[in-house]
Each structure stands twice: as structure tokens, then as C-alpha cells.
Length: 267
Image (cartoon, rainbow, N blue to C red; front, side, top):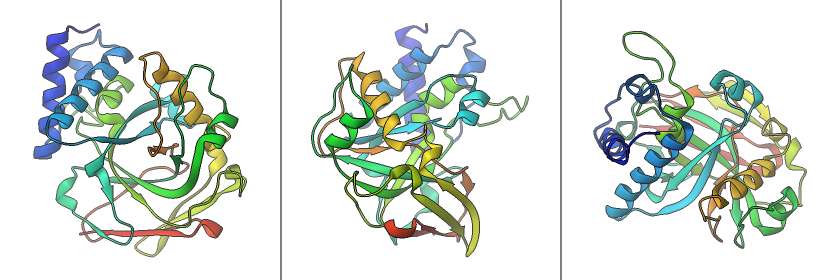
């Protein structure tokens, strides 16, 4: 475990990196003894800095929900991070490229809770019952910590990703909101178009067999810290496509079939 002084220092570095759009070297290389718990401790300290600036937590994201991503990260469960209020962008808007370092786009579903969820005994059915509606969402992920070290080219470890808000940087909600029992969420599909070309396709079942599974996992996971998911919060359930790189001038259009579309452009 890292000392509290180191945790505070690393959180401040991430806070500054987000504001200056400057990438950091991997924390795990500097501190080989770093653990997953250290990653979440740094994340919580960073949230405190954002809250002190007047920001607030508007929801949570769940990452590393696919088996392939878990194996590549050498972990056996997803990760999670907060969604800060200044990370939300309007459907159909232009996203300022200068807000990001190396943005990539992922396709997801978002659960908007109608009532609180608190573990430890939360099930998939509890999630569906507590959800007001499910809506199409696109997550913008970014890297305040280098994905590959600038010198050794070694990939970052899951501890780095967790401390870095699980790579979260933005979210766009859109499409047609639906009650969670109105459709089989496992079979919700999406086609991601970048500049008019299909880059990725996927199904909701790619997220732990059912997108609500991750939300139940999250409620149980944060219960260990005395926390719960609150009514009105937006919960990103996890991506069911691979990340697609984005740059200034790129237009994205995601077709969710019966759930409508989400479109935006990087300016």
C-alpha cells in the first residue's frame, strides 16, 4: 500500500494533468508495490479536488466489462470511476477537442436510477426494478496516464487506469430512453459510424452477458466503502465495442436500432 502522502501527490498530478492536457508517466512503474486499492484511493482523492472546485459526482462508470479486456489487464472483475458533472456533453453538439489528450469513443448503455441501490445483496433484478430508464450513451475515454510508456513502451497496468478515473473523460446521452423491461437489453445492438464509415458493431450481451449485471456488481463493490448508488445518478454499464480513436473534425453517429441514435462531432 502507498502512503497517504504519495496518494495525495499522485491525485494532484492527475488533477493537474486533466486541466493542462499533459500525460503522466505510469504510476505503477514509479511504485511497483502499487495495488488496486491504491488506485481507488488515488481516484477518491482526485474526486475531492474536483469537488473543492465546485464539481459534483453525477454518476458512475463501469469499465473492463468484457472478458478479453479483463484478461489483457490481468484482473478478474471490472473497474469503476465517477462521472463528474462537467463530463456530460449534449447530443448533436460539437465536443471541444482541446478538452482531451487522446480521445477514443465507446458504445454503451446508461442506467438512470429512479431509487437508490445499496449492497451487499443487490441482484440484476434489483437493478432493473430500481432503474427509471435505460438510454443509449457514448463514452469518451482519455489517458491522463500514458497507455504505453514513452521510453519502454510497456503498457500501463490496471492500477494506473483505475487511478485515472478508469480512463473516463466524457459522456453523451441520446437516443430513445426505455423502461428496462421494455426490451431485452442483451439484444440491444449498435453500429458506430465514424465519418460515415462503420467502425464497430456490438450487442449489449457483450457486457457481462447483461448490462445490468455490472450495475449490480458496482452497488455491491462500493458497499464495502459504505457507499451506494443514488436516485437520479447515471450509471454507464460498460462498453460493448472496442475504443475508436477520435480527432478534431471527426463526426460520430451511433445507430442503436429501435433505441434511436446518438451523434456528435469533435471540433
